[in-house]
Image (cartoon, rainbow over the protein chains, first blue to last red):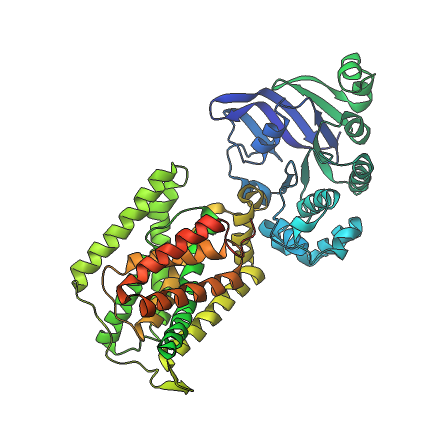
Length: 237
Length: 287
């Protein structure tokens, strides 16, 4: 088994005093793609936001490479190699595509010298064509590609994606997942939060099922795909 | 009659470029951290007094003083940010308004205490003479002030688009959470925006002192007119800011020459209300 990269222990978190996430524990190993699936409102987004520091946990621990990072501010968490692509992309609408990509590397500028932009453009050629356009003029699919690309320009060790398929037409979802497959082949470690369960289970190695703020099920994606609860509630079989 | 009007319009339009510069500082602060800074105009007043003070004490010309007052006002801006603004960011709007209004009152009282209530002006300026165009006279000091304002505005716009710090300011203004997720320390960026926004009043103050006098109560007027310029321009358009500055400057001059010199603030108030009523997002704004 490869080295453990991210470990979350008994994590509870929420907004103000409303608990959303309760006692969640899971881990992501180097080179692995782990998915967290679950219905709307289960706490998936809260989980990612707590890891990246946008929300402070109310209790529990988060370790990255064995170092405790829970409670650290988001800018320092991004600098140690965790990139969070938030739900809906959250681009900088009044900045160009190129400026958005540059901002992706803000906390880790030296990597721009390593040709990371060329690699990103190779993965998303559309963005190269549109690099001088303002982000708000992009189509929905292009926005999502830019959001993922912006997450990659810092050369993160862990890429966290929040619902990359949200609001996209099925053909675009396929395109996005093709690109994620390419990233997997390059050995990138990914934590994927997704409502689109069939796609997530096909891409990932392991999965956790989050319901009502608690992890209720975990296992390899093959096992999860065969699980009767998953089949009935998430795959509609 | 028309001659005086056009003469006044020209003067107003040139002064309007300085107004745009003041409003640019305000838009950096409001656009990035959503803080309504009521004390901004009073920083212009303080800058004018500092210019007056330095000019009287050392003989350094008002047009050059910004080299000294710009870093000073930048530091004052940082101090105000960390001492006051930073603590109220998560408070209710009323609290934020209360502290900046408090700062405004404080600065005015301080100016009255140190420099007394009578208007002060510098007796001379490096920029002498005037240019004659047909029957109109343009003071060289006004022309140079307008030109410097436009150059500084252009410089700031380059800073915002070409430097890491500038892009961080724009990113934070577009989406603060997303900016934090990519390594932007919001506190640092806010402090920079507040410092820079305040420092721009140093340039404006120096330029204004080349042809104007200063008194402790004039901060309100600058505050009001810079809000008016910003409301007219909307957020995010630097050329729009310049055009709006010129419109406000010209409107003010027109009101003074056609109506009554004492009506200058009234004209700006009316314009402000009109803009908010008809185009609440401004003429050039993006959202």
